[in-house]
Structures are given as C-alpha cells and as structure tokens.
Image (spheres, rainbow, N blue to C red):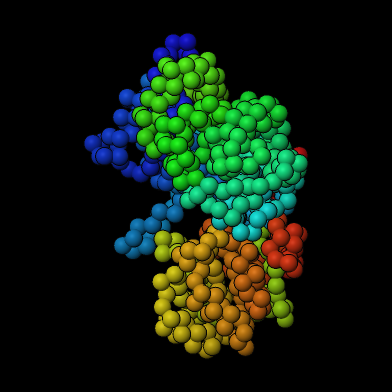
Length: 563
C-alpha cells in the first residue's frame, strides 16, 4: 500500500486531528470540518474526545466508511474508556446518562500495590475501546511523580517510586495489548519532576543523564520490555540533552531519535503530545513546529492547530529537500503496520449492537470497584475516630468542595453515606462561595455531631477554581480546631494533607470516580477495610508505604496475575 501512495497521501497518514465524540448531524459545522479533513487532507487517523459510547462508535463508523484508507483511532483513556465516555448529565433534572467503565486514578492503582489489577484495568480498557472503534488508548502514564508541586501529572501517575511505576505500567501495557489495542506510554522521556503545566508554558527539567536513567526512563524501559508498541512525547525541555536550552523534547532529534530510537532501541509508533498546547504552539509557529517534530523522529502529529496546513508544511519541506521522502516512508510504514495489526484492512467498523454487551458491563465495573476499595489510604486517625459508630440518629454534615463543572462530585458519596445516616445534611461549596456562606456553614458545622469534608481537587495550582481558595482552607482549619469530630477526604490531590496539620482524620481516595466515592463512604462506617499504602511521599511524616490499616469485610479479588 505504501508504494501506491502519493507524497501528499503519505503525509496525510501522519496527521491526527481531534474530534468530539458527540452527535453531529450531517451538515453541521463540526461534521463538515472533520469530513473535509478526511476527504481533502486524507488524514491517517483521529483522536476522539468526549461523548457517549454509542455516539462515538456511530461517528467513527461514518468516518471509517468515508475514508479511502482505514483510520487509526486514538483517545486519552488514562483511567479506562470512562475517562472520555462517562459522566454525561442531563441538566434539566440532573439525570446521569451512564457510559463506559470509569476507573480510579493511576495513583489509586499504585496504592493497591497489585500489578494484577493493572493488567485487569488494561484488559477492560482495551475491550471497551475496541468495542467503540478506538485502537490506541493513550495509556499508561509512565511519568514518575516525584515533585509534589506537579500541576499536570499528580494522581495521573502510579506514584513516586520508579520501580513501582515500571511494574504497574508494564502490566497495564500487557493487559491492553493482550486484548487487541495499542498501549502508548507517556510522556517521554518523563514529565513528573516539574512545577509547570505544559498546557500553559514550557516546563524545564534540569536533571543529569544518570538521574534520567535511574528515575524517568526506568518505567519506559520496563514497558518497552513488556512489548509496548507506542510512545507519546513530552513538551518539556531538558537542558544538556536537547539541542538548545528551551527546545521541547517533542522537537529534539537527540531525544526522539538519539535516545528513544537509538540507545533504547524503540521501533514502535511515536506520537507527539498535542501540538496545540502552549508549551509548543508558540515556539516556532505552526509550520516549523510540525516540520521539526518530523525531523526529530515523530511519526504522528497529534492535534495540529490546522491539519491541512500541517500537511502542506511537511510537503514543502520534502520538496525543498529539507526532509527526505524516505524519512516520511519510515513513519508511514509504522502507521500502516499498526493498522494492519488492528485488522483494519479486513474490517474497519464496529457492530453498534455489540457496544451494550461490551462497554460498562458489571464484570468490568467490578474491577474498577476493587481498585477503589483496595486503594483507600488512611494517613491520620486521631482518637481512633474511624470506623465511625454509624449511629442512625446522628446529625452528620457532609461538605463537598468541587469545581462548578464537576456535577457528579459528591453525589455517590452522599447517597451511600445516607444509607447509614438518614439525617445526613449536605452542602456544596466552590471557588465562588462567599464569606457569608462560609460563616453560615461554620455555624452548621458547630451544631453537627460529625463533619465530613470532601475535596474534589485534582491538581496543584494557584487558580482558586482548581486548588481551593483561602476561605476554604480557613474553613477546614476552623472545623479541625473545633470540638466536633471531623474527617477530611481527598478525592484527588493527596498532597493537600500538608495544608491541614490540625485535621484529625485524613483519608485519600485518590479519585472522584463513582466507585471511589462509594468505597470511601462505606469505609468510613466500617463496611470496608482500609488497607491502601501510599505510592508517594505525601508529607514529611507520610512517606512511600504510609497508611494506617483498619480491618473490615473481604471483597472480590482479581484472579489474573501479571508477572
């Protein structure tokens, strides 16, 4: 097939724009735009974003039938297919519409310490992805989160220990690829040790080659030994390795070809990270960034700001002699080989009636539930407050801090907790909560038998919408200093423990997934054991392996082992 393609057609195979997985009727702007990419730029694939499983599958079938060559379809599925196809809510009455299986964060998986669960998560992710027409789950994240101030990785990582990250990552890779999808390790060569968000600016990581080998590269080597077939680059600068001080790894021949292809011997697909991110979009301009990524050794240009312009830029570079056509052929051959491994030359569409039999089914969500249950980590429990007595007449106040867009935060937790405490009172707060509202909430807390504060804060940021406001911090400190029993639960960033030295009970659920909310509520009242061990150093007093153990009922355990 490669020999029969024109230069323009070959270049098109290296371009992967993003599409929404929503319902887009024929004639709508979004539908017309993506069909132009398929018809005119003859793109090689797409990365699909949020939508329901059935809408995603239907749209991909339409595009596959329209494209002359089969499309390679990718999606960010870091916590399973539910990462992009779960959480839709019908706003008039708040009805949750359901979707694919949503797993807790990878750091929750790290807290279980069980590689067999990583394999099972990979299996479910691949099964559900392939059912809707996705071939490349952009997972696992292999970054070692050794910087607590990391604003972009955080709980997306398995943890801080390179050996644990490598072991878990290798098993997740096997789970994905044993079940028909292409695992993609990201973000090469390692995005963990930074305090800058690459969506907003260029992170600069200043580490020695020796340190890079022993920490950042170690998980990638483990995943490659497990057969990982793809890698995604990191928009980070590595002075001393990249050709210039502020050149992103995505544009560096030294990193992608010299290190990844050369010293590490990787011959799989190399995807750039999104080329519309500010860390790279402002470097040299759209055309030059695209050309430099290909020169560096990337195979697929992910989410170029203007896909047809990216095709034209590469075509001009070949015509001028700057890029050899044989270099284009190398990447196209990898893309076509990946499509052949997926069997797309034989059948490129999916059975829509099969989606309901494969996606979000009970046997899949059971695995997610076990990860959530076994990951719960108790860092502080003064006076043996937990497990709670569960007195049904108790006056319990549950306070949920969430982003305005996170409509499901706290819903499952409060529903489960209300099964024990019928008189449960709830309050929702966020970045726009006023001082007066906090004062009234403080009064309610003083009149309660127990106060539970749940934080759905997933990142480290100075932005109050994400990392919490000074008013929130003061409210929690006030509750902690009061004589009311109180529990603080992090459904996201676990490092918040450092902000509240007064809090009496602190538990990390690592994720706001529904299964994590349910597990946390059950654990509070002793219906579930608490046995997680921290995969990262959360504070000076709580290092790797920290976690108080509380006995409880046994639960389902995955049977498959990953050696």
